[in-house]
Image 1 (cartoon, rainbow, N blue to C red):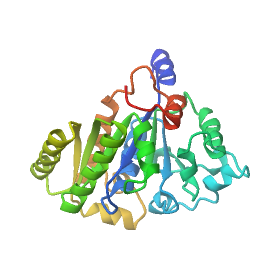
Image 2 (cartoon, rainbow, N blue to C red):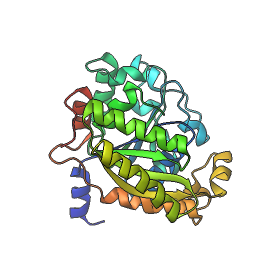
Image 3 (cartoon, one colour):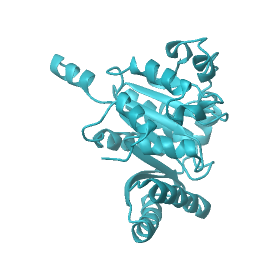
Image 4 (cartoon, helix red, strand yellow):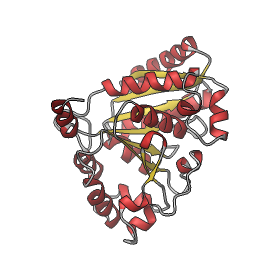
Length: 280
């Protein structure tokens, strides 16, 4: 990388990506791990916040055993640097802890602490992933609304499709969200993925007037559960497998997505989280 490119990279805004799902069991956390790892392998600087209240398992899926988590940050015992653990390809992971709900409440002590600590990484990150909890809690909707990219993970199962639609409906009707990116997981192939996307997209356009963008799909792949059992990202465990290739392709598409016009970066993300966070 030449000097001009390095300077441009440093000055570029952080792309904040909230990954959500209407229900659990669709591979959301595994998606975050593999997209983050793929981007890091491409030379991007990536941080992940495990934002699943009390049930965060991102570190477990990677075989990590963090000694500290967000509760130690909020209590003042540790700094953000001290609680961060390193994942595949050097991604930085902020371990979850009960109490993260307070981070989405405007002006709280916890939010101010995390804002101040994350502010030190401004200019040192290219991507900030939020692994949101499954469902439609206030915490989930707050993070999704504030992010640059609202990425919804779903499978072809009817319950997953129904719950993904319900999540987008709440965000649209209650908060005016109109743009969502969809990643289909555990599909038999592109034909099934396109069929599921077209069905969801038509319903969304007809009843909600939302824009649903097909970001990609990840096929069923026996290597994925094997990687999970080995507590590895499948893109590291079997880099040439169908699922790994799909994650890498999706990561490349994420790189091409724009950040919010006029308001990128972690500082602006926290401003949007505190209120007035409709997309530009």
